[in-house]
Image 1 (tube, rainbow, N blue to C red):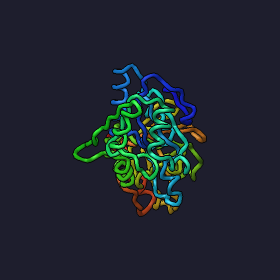
Image 2 (image 1 turned 45 degrees about the horizontal axis):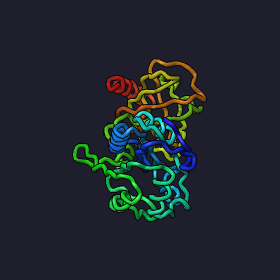
Image 3 (image 1 turned 120 degrees about the horizontal axis):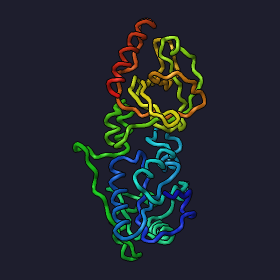
Image 4 (image 1 turned 30 degrees about the vertical axis):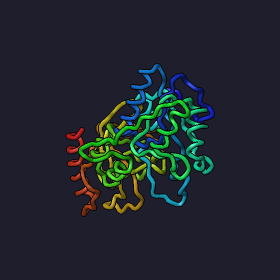
Length: 307
C-alpha cells in the first residue's frame, strides 16, 4: 500500500476507484466499501484509492467539544486499511480552510483533477463539502458531467443493527468489547508504552505492566477486568487487564495495567499491543488485600478459559 500525506502528494493512477471518509475503526461496514472498491479496481484494471483525513473533522470544527473518542489511532488505521487491501491511501490534513470547500469544487478540483476518479464508491448516506451539502444525488448528477461513475453501498446490518463507529464507541464505553469486536471484525486494540507504576502487583503475586496509551483521544473501555492477548516483541501472550482506579489499594488516577501470564521480564519503555477479548467483571473495592488476591486468582482462571 502506498501512503500519501496529502492530496497534493498523490500521483494519479490509471483507473482510480475512489472512496472517501474518516474510516474510524475500519469496521465491517467500511470493509464492505473497501471490498467493493477492490473488486471494481480489479475488474477495470485500475487501483483502489482511499482518501481520509487527519485530524478527525469534528476535532477541527468543534475544538471545544472533547467528547469525541476514536476507535483507532492513525497508525492502527493505516495497518487495518493495508490488511483490507487498499492500494493507495491519502491522509489529507483537515483544516478550517478545507472544511469550507464547496461540494462542486470538491468534485471538480479534488475527485476529478487531483485524484482522476474513474469510479467513486461511497457508503450509505454519505455527505461531503462545506456544511455537508454534497450528497449521493449530487454526485450522480455530477458523474456524467465529469466522466466518472458513482456507486452507493447500502447500509451494512449485523443482527438488524446498522453498524457505525458511534455504536462501536458506545459499546466500548460500556465495556462490551465482544460487540465492538464483532462489528469491527477484529479484536479491539489498545497500544502504548510501559511506564513505571507503584509495583503493588508484584506484592500481590500478579506483577503488572502499566500502559501509557499513545493517543489521548483513543477510546478507553469501561473500568473492569478483561481477558486479553498481549503482543510483546512480535510474540502473542495471554494476560488479564485491569482498567480503573484500584479502589482496594486507595488508588485515584485511572490506570491501564496488564498482568502477562507466565512472564517475568522487564518491559519498561517498550511498546505493547493489547487485544481485548472479553470483559470478566466490573472493578470492585474489596474489604482487604487478601480478598483481592483471592479474586485475582479467579480472574486469571476465567481469563485463561476465555483465551
